[in-house]
Image (cartoon, rainbow, N blue to C red):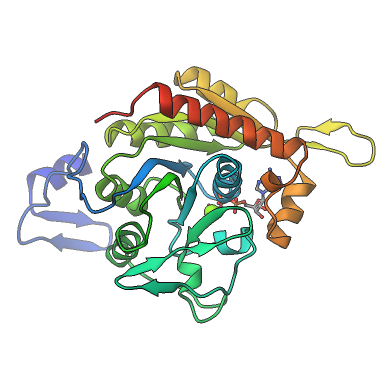
Length: 295
Ligand SMILES: Nc1ncnc2c1ncn2[C@@H]1O[C@H](COP(=O)(O)OP(=O)(O)OP(=O)(O)O)[C@@H](O)[C@H]1O
Ligand SMILES: [Mg+2]
């Protein structure tokens, strides 16, 4: 009812008073937005997103990038402008970004991944970025178009939570996103979270490469028994239900917690978690190679 009113008149009655508009609100645009063409030179761009926060997008992005970097030249853009975590996860917090001519050089990490993040631009780790969408869009545009990405095989985009401004900016600024990796936790609510992310991809015509179920079971370091703290199987169920590939299950792991704190991603080590990320990376490479993303 309220929606009908909004569409048909320029005076809206709200519980706290009346809102008057000079002109009726524009009809929302649904569908792929127009593309910029200045982000060039990268063969494949992979976006890592989720329907909500704290599910492990940055963890998956960084480890996926490190796993890919064992075979390819890989860049990583920390698209989370307000909450940049990737410098810490890659052990390069506090590094300075260099400029060469008119281009910014990404920061090199010991893991073969080159990264750009708002974290490198801030005077201190405590500085809060309080920017509206338009400014964040501008920063993302600079990360894509003014950083030296020529010749990279894979670009991983670590998104902030949800389906708001930033993924929309990516859909406008990247001429071709090869595919989207959706991260969920294993609870039933994963279905709902995955559905939103999948719906976003459909609306902006991005291919879903698959779902990763993160924090899936904790292996006790003492007795070896697995406890499914957040239940099990939500990611796989969501993948089946929405008919997209299931890319893998990452356990809740102390190695990942320690890796986050020490800036050494698990994928750079030689353990079971590292093997899982390698497997996910292989599946992504295969699916990017086999099936072209929508034009
Ligand atoms: N599989 C895992 N095992 C143990 N800890 C994990 C795992 N995945 C993520 N974490 C931890 O959970 C926290 C949130 O992870 P992360 O920052 O990757 O989530 P995010 O989705 O990027 O969050 P945000 O939405 O805020 O960007 C971090 O402290 C991270 O170390
Ligand atoms: Mg994050």
